[in-house]
Image (cartoon, rainbow, N blue to C red; front, side, top):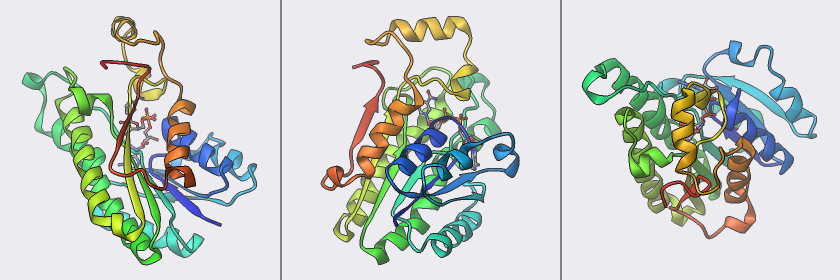
Length: 244
Ligand code: NAI
C-alpha cells in the first residue's frame, strides 16, 4: 500500500486532503504542530473508516531536525513515502510599514523553510524509491501579491520557485513536484477576515463564492494520481476565477 504524508493536517485544507487521499487508497501520515490539535477532532477516525492505516506524527515543520526524524518515522511505519503534501501554513498579516521582524520571520519559517525541510528528507526517500509525488500549497497571494501580506506572499511565491527547482532536480528519478495556488477557501484561516474584507473578495471572484476545502483536495488527488504522471513543475490556481 502507498503512503501519503500531509503536513498541517489536523484541520482545514490539510484534513480534507488527508481524507481524500485516504479515499484514494493511501495510508495516511497526519502531521500537526501539537497533539492538542488532534483532541476533540475525529480526522484520524474518519480516515481509518476508509479502510486505510493512519498515524499522527507531531512535528514543527519549521524545524529542520524535527522534519528529519518525522520523515524517518513515517518511512519506518509505512515502508515508503509516496506522496508528500506540504500544506502547513500560517498568516501573520499586517501592512509592511507596521510589520515586525518577528511577524515576517515566523511566516517565512513555517510556510517556506518547512517546504525545504520536508522536501529534502522525504525527497531523498523518494529518490531511493525512484518514484514520488510532491504537492505544495502556494496561494494566489504568491502569484499576484496581496496588501497586508508581504510575509505570506513572499513565502508563497518562494514555494513556486522551490516547486520548479525540485521538479527539475528530481524529475529524472520519477518524482513530480507541483503546486496548487488556492484563492479564498472556507477554513479557520479565512474565518479571521472581517465581513467587509470578505465582501470585497467575493466581488473579485468570477464564481462569486468562496471555495470549499474539498475543491482543493480534488486537485491534489489528481496530482497524486496516475493520470498526472507527466505533470510536473506546474502551479494550478484553484480560485473560482480570481484575478485571471
Ligand atoms: P489552517 O490554519 O486551517 O490549517 C493549517 C494547519 O497547519 C493547522 O492545523 C496548523 O496547526 C498547522 N500548522 C501551523 N504551523 C505549523 C507548524 N509549524 N508545524 C506543523 N503544523 C503547523 O489553514 P488552511 O486554510 O487549511 O491552509 C492550509 C494551507 O493552504 C496553508 O499553507 C495556507 O497558506 C494555504 N492556503 C489557504 C487558503 C485559504 O483560503 N484558506 C488560500 C491559499 C492558500
